[in-house]
Image (cartoon, rainbow over all chains, first blue to last red):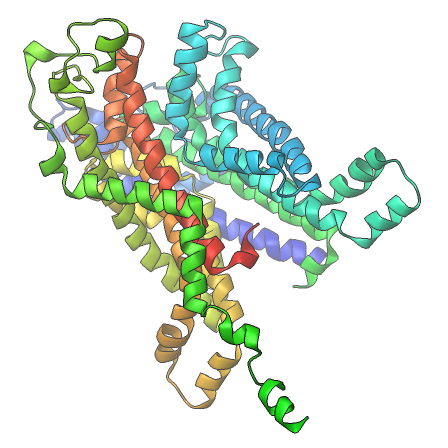
Length: 305
Length: 311
């Protein structure tokens, strides 16, 4: 277990290093940061002065390691446009995105696991077919369009829910549904397949033969084992949701990290963009690392392979 | 006894087997009997026709602005609300600068399909090459490819695409390139695992034993046998690319105006969404139908070619 964990950790570190390198290169190669910082009316002398002051005249590798070293200690530079430290900006916006992510994931799991279980109990029944059709339809629905349609229906026609801002929990209902529904088909199929396999296994037959109550067999014995793969998928999907929050937060004017990303991207505020891409990648890398370690702990076969 | 055993014994076909339909006929029957596959193929075919023949089908020039006919409602407003502004001349109304909405929707199919197919080809070439190499050679090659896949997966697609498109200038070509270089991961993952399975099959061992070259084995023995999975992944990624382009254009950082991209049309209609809801409904329905038809086609191909992988 220890050697597996060590190898997995090493892989994660390498990935962090590569992702940060790609992020830094892509954003820095696109535009001259000194020019972006100086604004349109700046003279060549101004640009030169800024280049010296910010250290943009140093070699590329020195700049990269300077940036990475700063990122490790939480020092992510200063926003070009807002003149505030990036780390402070991120900390301000992170709670909104985290709340959105957790709500969206909960919505997806609460919808898909019961549907998957019901579908697995009676494969090819009308309920199963309905769940499957819904997942096919849902997968083709553009997230941002679905959000707009919800705004028209629940925000404008019915006036049940607020359409922008993040003041109360009601503000998070539509964004969470819009962000979460896209993950439900994957969760549902995985739960369904896992349940069908587990329900056909010997220990379930034994449990039934012992005369345990059906509910106890279903939840205590079957579901517990069937949802193990769902846990690692949930880690992956949570990472994707944080990344996808940029679209949803922009539509609902939720002032989280995604909205900050969109603002900074459209204003070429490079330090903020770099920090956000790195942060979201880090979340994904740590989440998948934890999920893999958990899986290896639960299933010894993975450790050996 | 002896005669019956030679006629019906092992290795011979039974009467039932002799009368049974050929494998091709069975496949044909499975394809045409698959309702959602047929539906997907039909809708996708119509969209293709719409995109290819846009200049012939569209009633108006999709770029022609007209100040006199701005924000005309679609024809059903004449039926239900007796709106005199809704006419057959602009069946689906006009947008805020008076361009015919139906014509723009028809030309929009062209952009979505172009982005979908081009991205699919680019990412497919990258991902399939990596996946087949990793699956066939294993060892260090596999290690490197797995690392590349892990790295790619940990980068948030929408944010990276947005940032790169914004920083390098947004145009159709840049969007295709960015999406092509971001969406190869599923190709690599799936091709890697199916190649691993195919590598140990008898015909591959046989080809190795008679001394076929590695490129020959990869292209002529492995590739044709993993084609089914390739088609399925290709449809998934094509749908994915179309949805992502729409999202990028919707955020104003994808295809640029005045191109009639459905995502861009949604973005332009957003400010009018409370007063002219059809403007935001129609492009969304087009996107939904296109993506649905591609997904149904992919699911159908998987069902028909490998029914055992259905769930």
